[in-house]
Amino acid sequence: MDTTITSAPIGSLRQRMLQDMKLRGLGAHTQQDYIRHVRSFAAFLGRPPDTASAEDLRRFQLDQHRRAVGPATINAAVSALRFLFTMTLKRPEVALGLSVIRSEPKLREVLSVEEAARLIEAAPGIKYKAAFSVAYGAGLRVSEVTHLKIGDIDSERMIIRVEQGKGRKDRNAMLPPHLLDLLRQWWREGKRRGVMLPHGWLFPGRNCTDPISARQLNRAVHEAAEFAGIHKRVSPHTLRHSFATHLLEQGVDIRVIQVLLGHTNIDTTAIYTKVSSKTMRAVASPLDQIVALMEGRKRTASPPG
Image 1 (cartoon, helix red, strand yellow):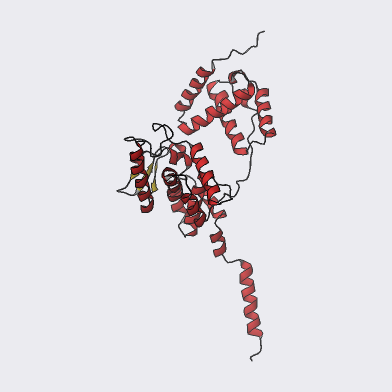
Image 2 (cartoon, one colour):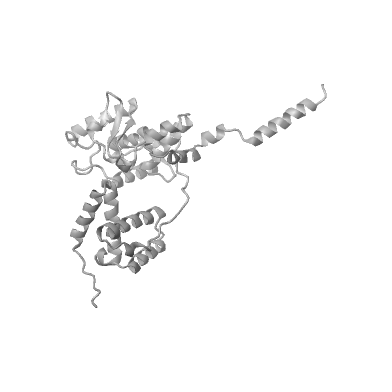
């Protein structure tokens, strides 16, 4: 019996997978990530991914562990490959052995207010200074910053419209006056350079018809951190984390922060309570109360002078 698997051309397989993802409502960023992970698997395999066996997937995961690939990347690859084999190839049994990594969420790196100011000031140019300020001043995700359009800035209502954010949900983010002033400065400079197209991207990439990429933004943050002498592990997302933490330290209700961040579940927002040092300092330890009580008793027991 001939068990040879006939592979489809890689281009047509990619097209079928994209169509399947669109039919199931996956966002553009998720689609890009899934395609990237499938491409990585195909490179490891050395042949079209639809010819793979369960043993090939097992070898791929072992290779990821050997190369010390991070848990988030491994789990994202699992999601992509499960989709490919279950939805597009209709061979779910091949992906049954894929394993995700269960790990406790790590404390997120947060900048102090002074460090955030230094990072923004060290940005390589007005475009990146404005982009950093949107991430820190409005708490936007990296993908939300990169995909903002000029028309998303509503100066009358002082809000930023975030369309098709995480989970394909639209929301409004805050637009502080200082941030609006900075965005206007960048808009004027962008118009002068000829990169601001009508109804175009707020932060154009190398080609003004495309948005700036997350990789470009990440590289700019690393350059700025090095220039500013910040030795923490920072990324554009660090600015969003810092936004949430600093609001919490100001006493802003966590439910308000949840809305501003666009979190569906307040448990996600509650992670920021673990990194707010000011919140911890503001809480009196029971030990302090015991010591205060003991000292009070000593004073009461002391004979009058």
